[in-house]
Amino acid sequence: MVLKIDLSALKANYRALSGLASGARAAGVVKANGYGLDAATVSAALAEAGAQDFFVALASEAPAVRSAVGGKARIFVLSGHMSGADPGDAIPVLNSPEQYFRDRATRPGRPFAIQLDSGMNRLGFEPDEWAALKAEILSAGPELVMSHLACADEPDHPMNARQLGAFRAMTDGIGVPRSLSATGGILLGAEYHFDLVRPGIGLYGGLPFADALPVVSLSLPVVQTREVQPGESVGYSNSWTASHATRVATVAAGYADGIHRTLSSDGARPRIYLYAGDVACPLIGRVSMDLITADISALSDVPDALDLISAAQPVDAVADAMGTIGYEVLTSLGQRYERIAQ
Image (cartoon, rainbow, N blue to C red; front, side, top):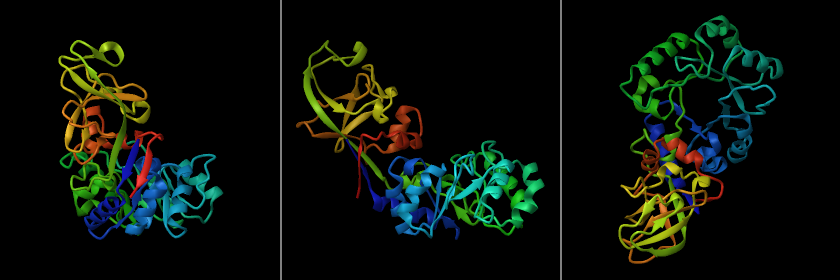
């Protein structure tokens, strides 16, 4: 099982999103082990492309990024300063008065950032909390004040303008660098960009950045083939039965590797395909823990591997078939894949 990571495409996506950012500096979001692709590998590539700021979710994710990008880059921890979790030389993004006072008590004089809740109601200081502590916090010199958009992948959603207004009301005139936008916010336009943008999924070839180059391909080895006769079934629960003679390939991957059982086919129209080049091979039967099966009758030769993610079927097409989003597909890809960066 081989997961290939196209680093040149990753760098090109970073430069493209950075170029859209109206003069704002572009960071790289590398949380969840670099969206499942290996944080050290993608962080090093993004640094080569010009990134000087990186965002992780947890303090435990920062050391791998630090080892890849060196000591001068800034690494922000989005969960802030959690009790018992020392952010080390990373910069905690403090989300509440509790985190702020903990951080200042245990890390006096060390860099920190602030997150404000502009309406998403997930992380960040509430407006009244910010108003009460704003003067004190600003006097301590935060590196960054940020918030996060809830509906940026829906450009016409009224929540975008509401959050922009709320963020401006809380931060205009503070004299501190500001950040509001991830990938979707970058695409909303210059008024959302402020001083720092935080591209994430767009770097890795995912929507809503429709112009992204594909970064990931996923090849799965063929273990065995057989001829299945009409009336014979394939896989658990006899869920797929051949209506005609069918050549079936058994492929080494399954739900333990992030290939959801929702992709299983009962013999009606397949939910997903595996590809041999540009030839589509329907996935048939149930997805099991370690194996899936595909109809390869259309192929003249049996390939060594079939592709689940490729130029013919990008990550968001797989996500649509699963009923989810590209983020989940990438971050669910298991550790049994051999990750090859090239």
